[in-house]
Image 1 (cartoon, rainbow, N blue to C red):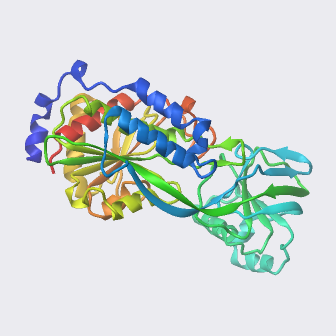
Image 2: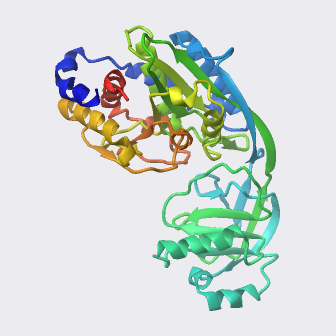
Image 3: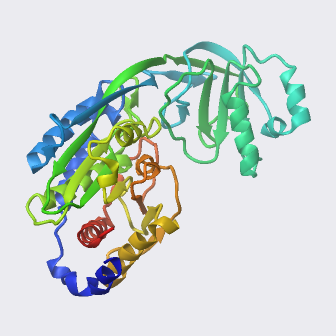
Length: 424
């Protein structure tokens, strides 16, 4: 059946002028809405994640998706470390701006006061004898800072980060200074020391002391996956997934918009669903939008373990994460694995015949987004992400202005044609 489908694709796929019409304006509207301050980074301050869930529920209803259960929601909870108050940091009286000049690690604890700054050559942390000598010194009431520019070996850098993470020097705090921009994450736990990251361009020369005021709070949050359903005229079921949560914010004013990561994937899922609400389709379509991805794929793990549709009944799952650019093409994660050979042939055949995507590449199995928990459960699952354009991963500059949608038309056409022709 599969080979027959591939052979006749060129006859069945209509000319370019008759291809399904993606609604780029609708996608832009959704990205702008989800990235707005209303949802404060779709995290765990100001109830941003749950506000976004309510918006997405209404949007599913508006475009004609049905609730698979009673109310579109699949609820779960987890612990998360938050920073509910504005933080301040100054070095020798110079004030620095959080998330622009520096970022605090997501596991960090409360910290209030002024401490001497002690520089340590990062090479000494990777040398066992030098490190043993360092451990004999007293750093308990000091803030240690170090540059990583002299460490070229990635393995050594990882060793240094582990020693900082686990506070092997028993310091009050650490400042780690890197070449590239700072980025943030979400943590489900809290450490008893603070780690701050600067860039070389923002950190001052020969500093003496640092004043830091940080409040952190670890709390249990109740969130929900948002799930909508569109029945078709056949037994086949396709699933489109994306995580709608992001990093949230810090204090009252700093928030991470998460326009590309992953308002873009959410918008793409809803645009494709909206198209099929008014066009015939020979499959059932399930849209699953996850919370908790940034905290460790928690929403998709919960959904895969508590399926609304039996996992064995899913023909194929496509996860969309950071698809808002595409100037250099798209990558499909998992598709390079031999288990996905037939699906890869279908993607390739459609794309080569129509040149939807300028450069379509494939990667092997990876646990780097929400496709993975379903793959582990035996569901054929891949993950699309875009390449090119502006890349502000986990940064406050991931705003709608950086979402070009340069490759979105090709992605829309590739995915709709794949779902129409793929037969497992």
